[in-house]
Length: 240
Image 1 (cartoon, helix red, strand yellow):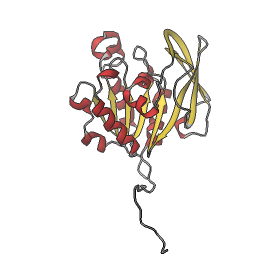
Image 2: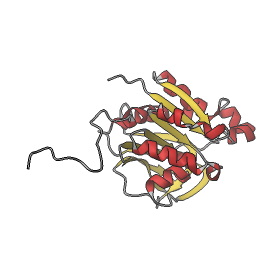
Image 3: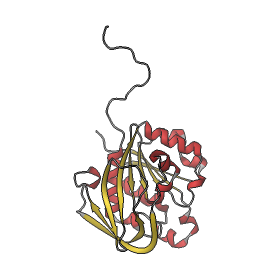
Image 4: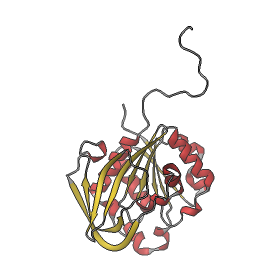
């Protein structure tokens, strides 16, 4: 099976336009940094941003997307419900979804989880140590038992999400908090991975371990190659 996937990287693209310090870290936007890493991994990558028509997520775009990567923060409320429903339907039909950092509060993630997705947080330049708690998981391939980010925004439990199908990473912060920072879910035929790091004021998406996780996650979340189920009334397969 080919590993070249059709990936769409979605980003609000607001912080980078409004704050010069963030633009210095991500001159092509957060979406540009992630798209570059995924292109280097051999995928067919496009980007989409909030201020494009239909937020860049038209039916044509989504129908030709194997995996959608989502970063949002300051403008969750501006994402049109019609587009949210379109994304959710595609996930349930088999499109993979990678939700990054503050995307936990996105309408898309909240609708797929069915909970508030709330948590504790603070921004105090704390060190984050991410422990691999499932070393057999393909998203952890090529990593050490743990890796560290010297400065990140802190998230802390309780994280109001349904019990994950799998927890791949748990974070510890130098201020003492812990957090389930890499969680998988399945909704319908689609696979979802939530990955915590990625606050916009830090160069997190330039970190090689973070890049590796996202690259691995895209491969893991690819649409399944198994049989497509059918629903509704079904004739008997056997003679009565």
